[in-house]
Amino acid sequence: MQDPFKGFNDDDQNNQNDNGPQGLPLPPNYATVVNPETGNMRIAKVGFSWTMFFFPPFPTIFRADWYNLLCIMGIELGSAMILTMLLTPAQLTEFVAIGWPIVRSVLWGSLYNLMYFKHLFNRGFVPADERSRDLLSRAHYWSQPKK
Image (cartoon, rainbow, N blue to C red; front, side, top):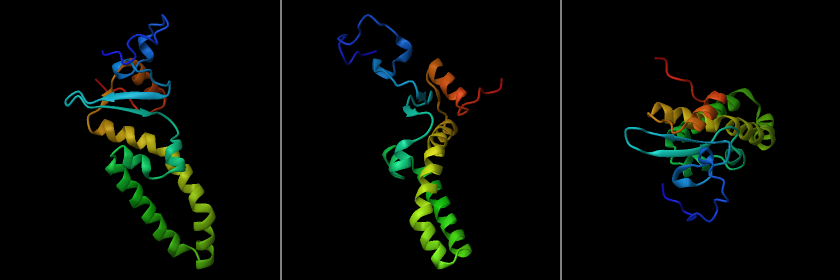
């Protein structure tokens, strides 16, 4: 692999387990997945998505994750229709102003990274290394295929 730092940041700690592609260090809560057929690689966080919490739906757009973007939009539109039918206009205005941004942020912050990895696994991606496989298994994102 290519060393982007030309050996200047090694400090005699040759720990290859924490290195991502091209020798770059990965934070402990990030996993690498690869599609063995195409060679495409993705690196993403496992756990709560703070970017989706504060800035929905931008993470789906920046990752070009159109499938999950459409799923999220469908769920939000469906829930908006249900709320419109169930609540009076005054209740609806209050909920949309106060409650919905909180509910929406917590919901998508909690679920988005799981949705992203599950969609990648359905497209044929697998964990790229043992560290990523362990991390994804511990978080219940990945289950070992049955032999």
